[in-house]
Length: 283
Image 1 (spheres, helix red, strand yellow):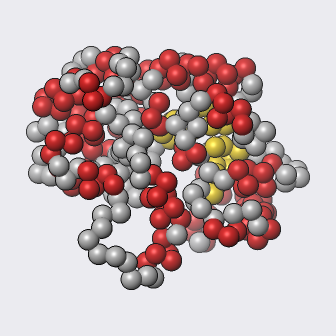
Image 2 (tube, rainbow, N blue to C red):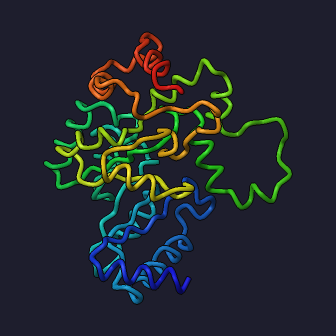
């Protein structure tokens, strides 16, 4: 903890904005409790004393957003987590009194018309939009809420005798079938070579690296806008093991990839474009 606190102080001195994450999908019986408020406020008080406070709090909990907004003194920006899956103007309007900034629902990363619509509303209402660029998760995953709740209760789950023969992660089970690998290309991630296209709308891009084995690889790829290697090695989750020993060669994508995937109707079950690309990039 001493090392972490020292590093945070040094980063703060260099002008790096600090974003505190309260991102559990479920806080159980404490979801709207005074105990939760005490925990959030005591953490923020401690960081206020240590390094003159944080600049941003990102959370998936409207209750925590309320707690932060009610704090007297320093104005902390409150950012809606990507896990809230806010992808419409209505979705932002409902909680606009609680959140200053929004991560776009990742399934709309390749819908430029939708991003423009959201951005126009956000600017008109003093809000900001952000995006997660390298999520490997399946689009519109029917297991996301189940999985996020499992993550929130990970410690308790690890203490239980759990059922055998059940794959709790829908994606890993789905990708056991070679025919389903095309879904990897139909997800929300953005190649490093295409990230510059979002500059008219997005000021800040989030890169998932919390569980990644090579954070520097991810940062370098998106910073330079180039990557030579297995594209799945940039994502979290990456699914490289799911298709091993084959991999997706990032240098083999066709020149029309970005244009095609950001202008199509997203009716993947009726289209063969991504399947044809998979045949080209799978090595």
